[in-house]
Image 1 (cartoon, chains in turn green, yellow, purple, brown):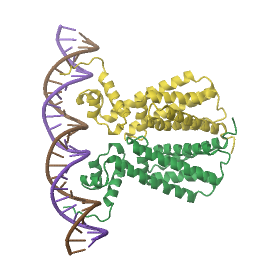
Image 2 (cartoon, rainbow over the protein chains, first blue to last red):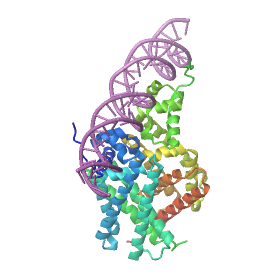
Image 3 (cartoon, rainbow over the protein chains, first blue to last red):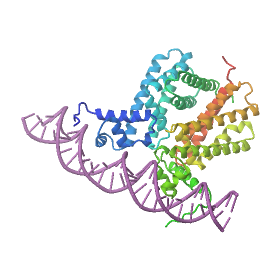
Image 4 (cartoon, chains in turn orange, blue, cyan, purple):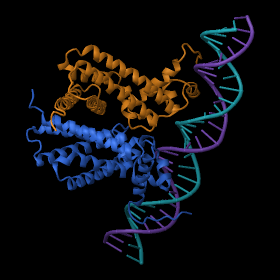
Length: 208
Length: 208
DNA sequence: CACATTAGTGAACACTTGTACACATCAGTA
DNA sequence: TACTGATGTGTACAAGTGTTCACTAATGTG
């Protein structure tokens, strides 16, 4: 018989969430996962699932919360490493891509959730993106690199930046994790997208 | 007993594809659909499915082909209606949004497929987007609105434009189909994204 | 008109699924 | 120390799943 003990509270909970992520990382779509499948992957009996989650949507929501933590950690790292404003774009894109590589499953889950079938998960991820964009706007304000922009215009710019980077996710996640050449291509293209946007922002309202 | 007759070739095929789209339109994710579910919605016996598709992925691929037709029709309409270059953005975004409203299920399928679980569907949708971007680049070249840009830079700009519009899909599809106010918000925001990008393109390379 | 092909049907299969129930074990607290 | 609630286990079941098979009706071609 399998031993039954609860070493730490929430250990199985974590196992279940990791199992779901692992399946997503293997190419499965979150919406197609079932309770039994997840518990099997976690090495846990199906009924244990209900001790921690009401259903798969609930698990998805809690994954969104963890995703938030991952994103915040990434932002903190970016803030610590990006010192000079002129390297800002390249450094940030680099950090993003390396996170997308390390936490591949998490970011796959994020990309899926944007058009997923749970409205709540969808809204959660959008909310994370909005937060990210507003923090980016604050940083730029602090760096005084966009003083000529109104708050609303700066917000819009950052929104577009975040969206563009998020879309690049589908590029990165679509290529093999060890295809360094293609990864470099994506990195460069994403960086140029952002440069284009910032050139637009720099010249915004000066015309018209 | 139900009558059994084959009035037109491919009638059931169409019924199955429409059934899948209908379920997607109701909020289900394509990856979570099953053969039985689709045939039930189509009012057809499960075995009929195999007369037309090998599996759900196959159905998805054929939906991508039809999606291509929808996109091409949209592009043709845009070309016919956008006469003056200064209204180009607003008109195009308007046409896009009205199509997204009319063919809601199709565009939901597209948004889902970008991060779906079938690599082939994913690649198909990306391919449609690339085609769209390259056609857009051709149009802009013909209009001579971006003569100072190299071909590669124009391609990149159009790529970013298409991505931004595609991302707006998740905005539009997330709101209720009859929420005109929110739809107008999305329309304006998307248009401003594109304006920002084009301002960037107009000033590209003139600096640095 | 005869015939091969295509498209549709229904029954059957072996599995998988979500969920409920009763029970066992642990951790902390009074 | 004895109790209590949280957590984990095993069994069970009805419903749903993908797929195969043999059969039938309609179609288009010779």
